[in-house]
Image (cartoon, rainbow, N blue to C red; front, side, top):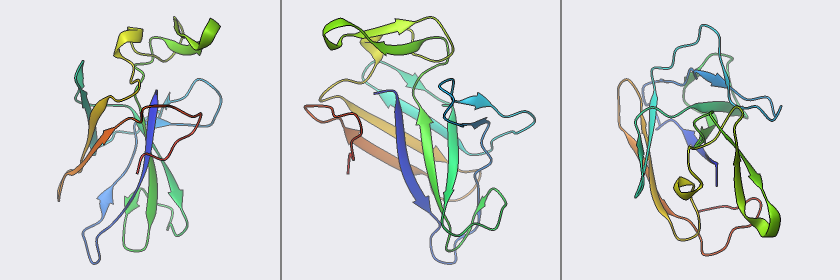
Length: 150
C-alpha cells in the first residue's frame, strides 16, 4: 500500500481549515508533484511500527460544493490523499506478486517498510488551529487493487 485517501468536512459552524497543499496530483504516474509557491500550513504525519514521518506529502481534491479557495468551509468536502512514498523510489510488482522498489521519483527506502497485511498505522492531520484528526487503521488480511478501510 503506497497511498491512503480519506474525506474530510468541516464541523457545523466550524472555523475554515486551510488545505493548501504543497503537492498536486494529475495521474501522470509521477505523483505527487511539488506545487510551485504553495506552502501548506496543515501538517499530516504518519506512524507505524517501523517508522514515523512528521510531514507527509499530501494532495487535495474537492468533492461537490467548493467556492474555489483552499479553505475547507461549511458544506464542503475534500478528499485528502496521503502519499506514503518518499519520492526516492517507485513501487512495482515483480514476479509472483513480489514488491520491487525502483529508483525513480517516489517510494519508501525499503520494501520491508511498506504497509502489508495486518499492519497498524496512524495518520494525524494537524490544521494550524482547531482539533487534530487522528485516523487509526489496521490493513486487512488480504489486499485488493482498491480497498475501503472503513
